[in-house]
Image 1 (cartoon, protein in one colour):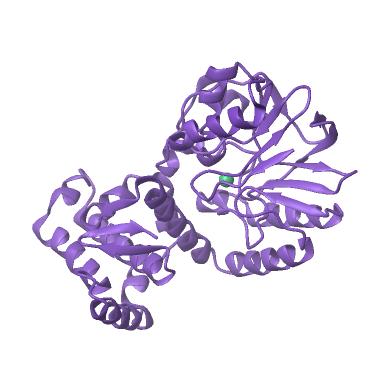
Image 2 (tube, helix red, strand yellow):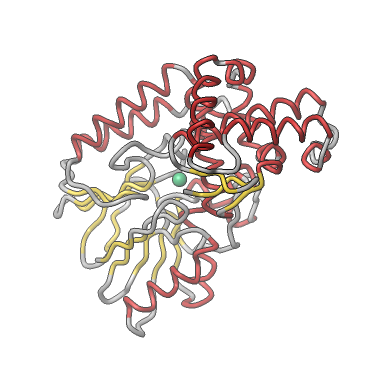
Length: 352
Ligand SMILES: [Zn+2]
């Protein structure tokens, strides 16, 4: 069994070697050639027999299509996604809603809680892991104490609780999933992103604290979602013109849902934020950066004033809606800069 630790644009992949090699999760579509190369190299000429997904977010199943083309591998997906994949309903699947891409794929079998699978000569139980995604599953090998957690538990946190953004329940499901993980006696966790870890109790403690924080105020979950979606866009594109940010965010339906739970005016006028933006802009300027965080506001405000290209992209939306996206983009970009998850290069926001 091999774990390919990939990063954040692509999920980790688990390759079960043995008689019928199987891959769990396949990364993001733009990394599909790399995923294929990793599998080819590890299998040394033998074919990949099976492909499975913990859940169908674009960063976990984006290589499915390429692997199916290369190997014709038997593919199992979470049962709750069957109809959407069969019809390739991009509205119902998460890709269009999140502004992300995924190559089309098919499935041969369904994963449902309670099933037992044999992978890499080990027995794995399929367990339900709703919260981040309503249909997500975990795989647990009781004999070895290995848990494959997908985005239900990372060493520091878990994936965005997406259902709550649409007013559906997700916090209590995420809590129940953490409770379930706590009962498993897992010795090692292979998360969907980041390194494997053995301090399961520590990770659970951090996850519960984060869930308490997010669920106490749905605004926090919505804000987190917008930041995560912008970071994902940056990972995918590496560089985005600041002036294009508002229209890009406006084109993502999940961002619109998140905005309904946020206080945009409150974000823009938060005196603490304004003060931080000011001081960090001065810091950036002193380092010779051509455009600090005040520059973001200026660039975006110019977009607002002259009704530039991004304003046109708002089409029938009101001027007020366009203003809200400019404020949101200013705040989200500032947040990534503050977290050192992005930097400014000229008039662009760049991945960091
Ligand atoms: Zn996910």
